[in-house]
Length: 328
Image 1: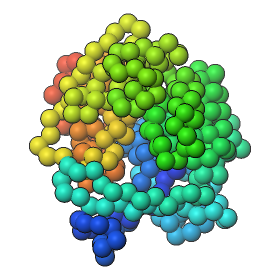
Image 2: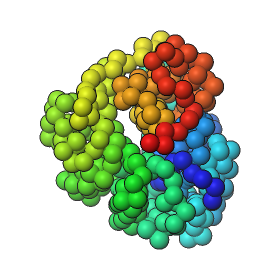
Image 3: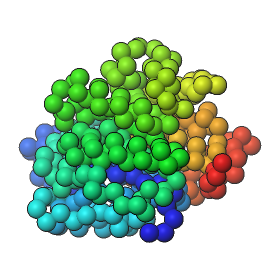
Image 4: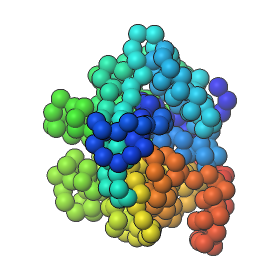
């Protein structure tokens, strides 16, 4: 495996997206895409020029081949994706809604190939990546996938790598809300950069105010906490600094799915390039705003050229040169 900037892992599903609005039961035509918060972030970082390795499992079926082909076409290193001959690739149906409305999503992922991820998938070359991005979705899939999340985050942090964590809560996948809170906070304590939404932070910590939510995770060992506030932008806090960064206004919200993944792409990429936290959050807000203006989970994620033309040119005097990784 060639030098890797970022390691990400989780489940990528096939997604059948309705071509007409209305109840999914009445829709006759669908088109095929991929879906998965973890792989959305991996794809977004790859589009910005990072070398990204993807760790996962797919079934030995046509949907698994479709998933792999799509990820590889986005530049991801999929050499650590296992093809499972016994368990299928997960998939989902997604409704088409009027602009701005949240889509209806039906999942078919129980017992999927990715739910059989385990610590046995960890190979030494993977641990050479400079950064690990993790979310709360793999640990919700199964006990073995939860063990993988814990082991990867523990080993990467012990090796001096940076680790980011987005809770990405999926309550329906957990046995109980309390189990979800306990396990997600255990993993968040292993991350340097924690990225909850405001509602997630309130549920996970019991605090209402963003400053208190951030303080909770700083006390657990985080170095940066960035809290997504939707249309109100984002709040960030470190041991030395804190502040709000305004949202980027958009003319029309087309599809809200993937906005948080776009935020993660912006924050992770900027921090890896040694930008200040406030500038990283500004980039995160901008990429999130692009995501909600495109139909699809990851279609709005920009390339480096698009980001340079549309975002960084406007504030070039504030930012360090982009594209070079921070080696400090």
